[in-house]
Amino acid sequence: MKKQILLALAAVFAVVTVIGVSQPPPAAAGGTITLSYANFPPAPTFPCVQMERWKKEVEKRTKGKVKVNTYPGGTLLGAKNMMDGVISGQADIGNLCMAYQPGRFVITNATSLPLGIPNATVGSLVLWDLYKKYQPKSFAKVKVLTVFTTAPANIMSKIPIRTLADIKGVDLRASGGAAQILKAWGANQVGMPMSATPEALQKGVVKGLFSSLEVLKDFKFAEICKYVTLTDTVIYPFAVVMNMNSWNKLPDDVKKVFDDLSFDQAAWTGNYMDNHVKEAVTWSKDAQKVEFIQLSKDEKAKWDARLAPITEKWIQKAKADGYPAEAIVKDIKAFIKKHESK
Ligand code: DTR
Image (cartoon, rainbow, N blue to C red):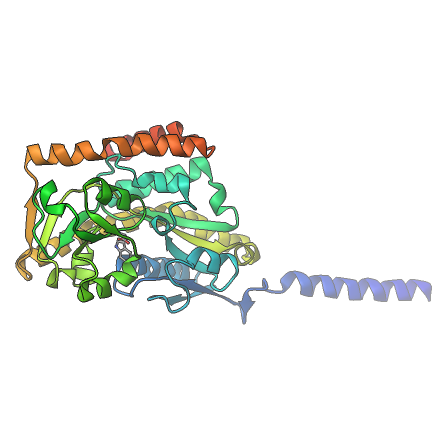
């Protein structure tokens, strides 16, 4: 009798174990894992184009096991609450521009010092290397899925800016690292996320902006800003982050797909951005008759001289705050060389 009871208990135990093991992970419903992905700018812009590409790749590589619902245009989370919204689980995944919170992402935002990142492809790979090497504490509460950068920033304006005298006191929009560069040139820098910029330009709150040039086409800024001053100065860094619980719940094979995509997605986005900038420039010249102003050699030297103290000042401040600031700058320069030569 005793033996029979033991056998019965063992059978029940076996059944429970099998069911337990074969149950889908908590995120799954009907065999599919559904994830929400929030983004702040409108759907046609490059942060959302890279989001759709990631979604497509993930759905393909997991053979439909993962479904990604995308929310562009700030419909789920906005530019400034992206990180905290993902940490608290309002979205499983979110794309953020680190430059909008300069003090929060000190190490990765060092990529927006004027160190000579030549394009978005190199920028994105430099940022990835930097993230991997330093594993910054600011990302401890999330899983970083990928990072990428814009192409270098240029001035788009309603009035021609050809000299430092022309830019003095002009209201221009920029955020993060790019902001101090505008200030160094003497502009009146106005801070706001890209998503707020179209209205500010339309209402005349600003006379122009400082950003990568694909926005001439994607936001139709070329219709308002008929002048571009070519400075090719700094990039803006971005990160795609995932809620830690959502990440932990994923089965190992899906985690592997996401990890395998990280570097690939950074390179894809950089390359997309660089090509898209070229298209936007051609369209702005041909269809919108935008004038592209090349600074003369002498003038450019004056603009560059104003930027010289920025990196040194950053090193002093970051060092005082406990960061290995000199090593960070040295690493960024070395990573630029490494990826430039490829
Ligand atoms: N240059 C940064 C980031 C940025 C560049 N292009 C876009 C498009 C959509 C959103 C952000 C950005 C900026 O000026 O905010």
